[in-house]
Length: 122
Image 1 (cartoon, one colour):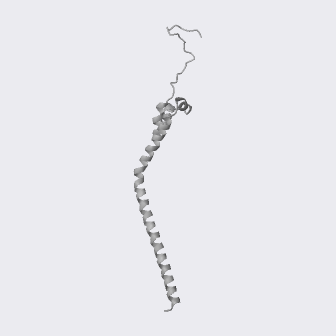
Image 2 (image 1 turned 60 degrees about the horizontal axis):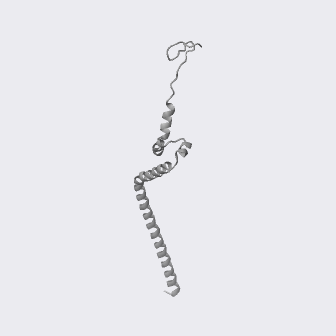
Image 3 (image 1 turned 90 degrees about the horizontal axis):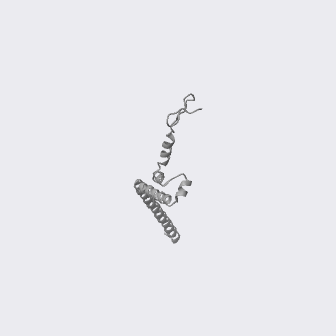
């Protein structure tokens, strides 16, 4: 074998080795990434309630930090804060709106009387 052929063979071998190393590194990265995604997906249901609790705690702290006047500007009272934080405040409002005032029918022909039962002139 002459030197030019050995140089070409050495050069080709190095390229093949470099390509093999690169492919192995990419495969290893893919496997690791898949494993981390799997662990993340497995932990997500466990972490979600913690994140929600932290968000509710922050919201409650912010609302408790407001003055009564600031809460009133938003249509809230201090007693509404737990319902707002729990997300049930809208439910409370819809229940309140379903309560209707007592309707009184006034009979125009009825006599008007005072507290002591005496008839009042119309």
